[in-house]
Amino acid sequence: MTNSAMQQLYQQIILDHAKSRHGASPDELPPLAEAAAAADARGLHLTESHQVNTTCGDEVTVRMGVRADPDRADGDADGDAVIDELVWRGDGCSISMASASVLSDSVRGTTVAESRALLDTFREMLRSRGTIEPDEEVLGDAAAFGGVSRYPARVKCAMLAWVAFEAALLGP
Amino acid sequence: MTSSVPPSPRANARPLTDEEVDRIRNDFPILAQQVNGHPLNYLDSGATSQNPLSVMEAEQEFYEQRNAAVHRGAHTLAFGATETFEAARTTVAAFIGARDDEVVWTSNATEAVNLVAYSFSNASLGLGGAAARRFRLGAGDEIVVTEMEHHANLIPWQQLALRTGATLRFIPVLDDGTLDLAAAAGVVGPRTRVLAFTHASNVVGTVNPVDELVALARSVGALVLLDACQSVPHMPVDVAALDVDFAVFSGHKMLGPTGIGVLFGKYELLADMPPFLTGGSMITTVDMHTAEFLAPPQRFEAGTQRISQAIALAAAVDYLTETGMERIAAREAELGQRLVTGLTDIPGVRLLGPPLGVERIGLASFDLAGVHAHDVGQYLDEAGIAVRIGHHCAQPLHRRLGVTASTRASTYLYTTTDEVDQFLATLREVAPFFGVHS
Ligand SMILES: Cc1ncc(COP(=O)(O)O)c(C=O)c1O
Image (cartoon, rainbow over all chains, first blue to last red; front, side, top):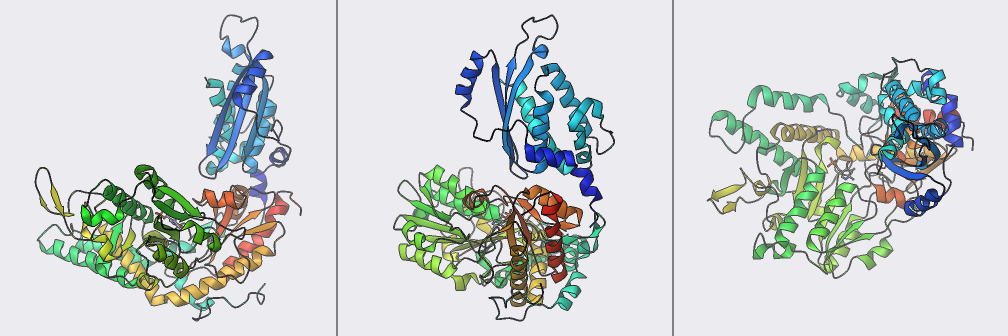
């Protein structure tokens, strides 16, 4: 068959990320309490979320260490906090694994406010059913998921790690 | 890959021929459509089957000519509706070798298993009186299932065990996806009260030895429930000959509509069982505190029934009977072996379940090394091929076989040989497309 539609969906960037899995932990993550205590010693607040796509059983856990902004300038103090560390572990299709890898690259070192803005842009693009042309300047590698927006059944796959990230941000 | 398929293990009937299948397809308008620019290749009948025109016409005819409440009115229309509804029961009962009053309508197989489990649960609370004592479960009693069950035949028993204090045990599965029958004798014992297992597996496609398992259950006095969801649609099944106490199946997997399923139960058992759902249409006399219940099957059919669905299911059964269940089974056994032959020939494919030559229905699940099932399914879908991906409602079995998800192709009487071959040819492209080289 002609593979052009499949190539639109599975862009090379996605296939590469699905293989290299930036930020993925090769081993089980250590128990949260233990890791949180260690992170605390490094001045980081540890938070995590586990998400499952019930349609296909894909799952991902995103765990991150957030550093509060020392200056605590006026305005949104939380928003100025920096995502210092992010590690994830998961099992799933190439789209969900690639998107976790891209998430890791995209948000590490950014402020919470910046990562939230990116998340909103990413989600808006994915929900657009192909009507929003992804802006590579803004989205970087995440722009490669533009093709996914034409496959509504796969949007959940692309969002899985990002939803975990969002839930972790809101976390306890 | 035409001559390499061995004779099917179920060689006792002449399989449907390719020409006959082509003619059958004319009765299924949905199959004529294009999907993503390709002819639809529907290989997901294990999840739900398509309906022939006669089934849709039966439903339409009912609404156009006969629609009325059954077992409730005295007017002509209601009488006619009741007659047609009960005739549907007779048709389905005859199809599985049961008596009319041993067929209880449910919404689907899942509800049928729950009906039995909740009836036992109610008996355990003392409902149904002394007659229902044989269904009471408590601490020390054991319910046995297998490791290959669909969640529909697992979770209702887990919950029953939790409600009653009984223990749930299971017959393990071997590496090749078949039941460990040697271990079964150690699991089923004097404490076993219920043995529930699937006739044909919705994941590995194998047909379990009902005779052997029923004999084992009988030797310890346990009741047997057979999940016939993947057998009744695809092969002749005679519940009396199999000597099971209960059997469940769903209409939508056998050319019928959704919303209708069947619980078969031996009459003498049903007669002693307390009801699950209660309300109208299942009682004789009612006062403000008590009610007396109708005999089976009405005792288990509370509320307004799925009338048009039951009638449409009977039309589906007529279609299957006219085509010939032996011939359908022989045809699908051939397709099952063809799937296995083709799959094992593709680099990186790991077939879940036993190898070529072992009896299986027209169904095969597999793992493709380096490519997740969801991606396999997406690639096939783009070529118009509909397969099932995921755990197929059998997480414990997948875990046992060392995978979290698999891809499943399943056939029915309308599946062509070319469709199986097109699926196999397209599957061959998948690993190279994803850059996986083996
Ligand atoms: C073996 C088996 N058991 C039970 C079921 C449950 O059927 P339903 O969802 O129609 O109740 C299915 C189908 O999904 C099945 O394949």
